[in-house]
Image (cartoon, rainbow, N blue to C red):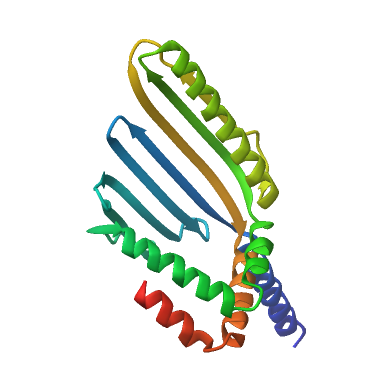
Length: 228
């Protein structure tokens, strides 16, 4: 009888340790954007539960048009240890961007303290890496120097804003290299952010409660996101 009780206690302890490990496991979000001349490449990935859940989206083609831009996105389908893959071509124009803005306004107005929820969630995010390297030149030394200064100002301002929203756990690496020999522009940005799995689950439950309290409930969100 005593051995049977010890067995249950050991099993319970193991389950509690496993649950604690899962709740504290990080969700790792990585983003990369590169632009050299007219060539673009974007890639975003999410890894959770020690790599058991993995989702990646890559946009190797981004072509601007007169009224918007076309892009091809390549997705790894969300799976547990799987290797799904799909590729599709989409277009975002002025009308679609306007609809996205209007839908965002509807969700903000009809969902209880949605901005507060976003701020609270972002406070749990740890920014582990932030790299932004840029090279610029416009065939004129004075203008190249002025544009270099403007880009530096943009980068430092962005870091100031981001530091108010998330936790910076490493020093951001920023460079701007002036190219006085030719007209040239290239930029490469990458970041790694983490949030604990338990915090992400809690944030999801809080959002679900806010959605249910909104006028129209969850169906409102479904209609807005489906139309988007």
